[in-house]
Length: 226
Image 1: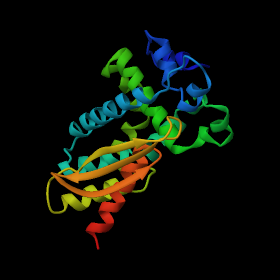
Image 2: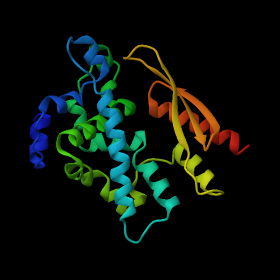
Image 3: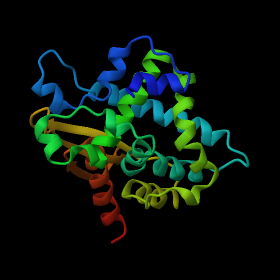
């Protein structure tokens, strides 16, 4: 079964099939094949779509959740580990296109690659079909975890810990900003800072945006709890 048939089974009729296939095209694959475009721009879109989709579901949840509860639960539902779990549960990693070297190095099972792929996939569906069709995918893996938060199979990450610590004193949300991206497209290095208002709380680096955010949050958290 290819990804288009997978979507058809969920009654999602895609207009631009190339866009969907692009969502599974890792930069290592694109670099080895001329005229191929990787999934990084779609990943950017999918990240935003996941945030708003999960936020809306949490906002409408009954009984109503507090702002702090919504923020904490959303962070757990869209963190890198959670997204990689969703990708595996839906068996989407079989559609992933990797370069020969990345395939040999076990890229098909790396949490960071699977999480990015999942975001790109959601971004591609959104661009092609709009927000309505997103639920036909996300309802399978996220709604059960909203209804039973204890079933979320990921530990609290540093982004969540930092947000909980900030909200214990102030009802504010921290913001993550990309300071710099260096290195080749198939092995980038991100430098990110986490801020509260105009104050920089911490800085972190990593080979993915999510890892850099986690490291920035850990840097901030470690400073705050000394």
